[in-house]
Length: 268
Image 1 (cartoon, rainbow, N blue to C red):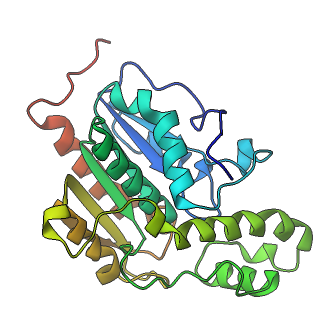
Image 2: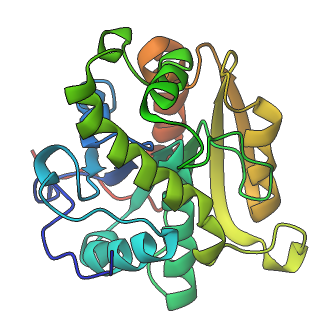
């Protein structure tokens, strides 16, 4: 897909009264609904803004991306105004972690407003060997079984070919995005001079069958300020064991809001 998407990737306009915007990027095969409960779990001063890639949920009629560089280019153009208007942070889960980081790196190169922090969950740093399945290695039933095994798909989908015909092409294209992360303009993790002036906190599920905490912790090689947190749960720990994860995320967001220079509280 070429970077010509014109439909908004945000389901609504950002709130004007928020002190911090939190842009949320979903996992491979997923959609913005992954973050549907987050506004009720985070501080009211934080505007939770799930980013919806095309080809799924409300944007299911639109052509999907297959290349990480195209995703970053399109999102950078479409989100530029919302990212530049005021303080922002981002959370990316699994594939969304790579997308959020690559988008931020591109904005820094272009002189855009940097985030207050990035939160990256359940994704190995790009230079670490990937454990994600290649897009075309498995047939539909094998791929569906893998999804069930690591918690990405309910067992009720097995044997439902009509459902799998809708779900699996989305996942395969997202896996192609993951496989082309090298085209997204990421810095060289082996060059200390290339490290980005960012604050990053990475989260890993203690029982994640796809990615280890060490692989997630390797994101620290890309930035100057880094914190690693291991939380209970598997690959989808925000759903599997939400309380420990949200406790830590809320604590980190509260520190951001309390820092000198943070956006003042909006009038009520």
